[in-house]
Image (cartoon, rainbow, N blue to C red; front, side, top):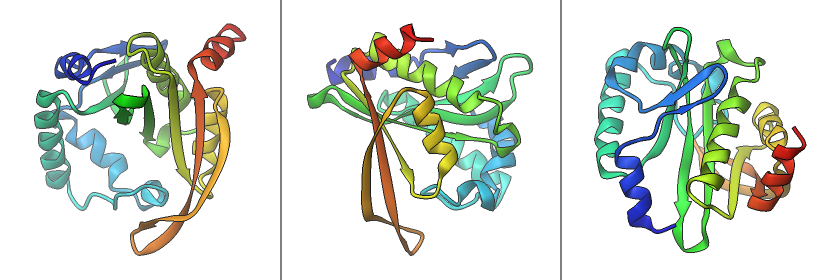
Length: 195
């Protein structure tokens, strides 16, 4: 898929639906919902960013995200509950490698909604979109060693664990070992038929 085509698609961020979720663009009106989880120390332990210090900070961040959508080079959706519209996390492509037809996905979920299969449901829909609509060949995901919940989502997506990059990232003053998992288009087709 050409870069220009993807940018065109994402300037009008497509809405994706699952059984319980609507994946849509983030808005500044999501500030309180996002701050509810983005302010938590326990959530950010395995993430690259630190807890949000205030709702104003979160609103400013979301205003920045809204401006990024306009360029078409930002591919992260708000995860919302279809029944009430509440934003409970984000999921999407953290980067797309156009020359090699591959992408990396990432996801963050409000801890109040952990253990309900919601992270997997959102990530599955994004993987499906990547293969069916963007024509990707490979989708990968990374996690910090110790983040068993994130690895579990990757395994449920049918991804293969490829190994660890030891102390490969300096995060908040500490070297972290990063695990990587991936799934290829033909593997995804076989995995989704098995479900």
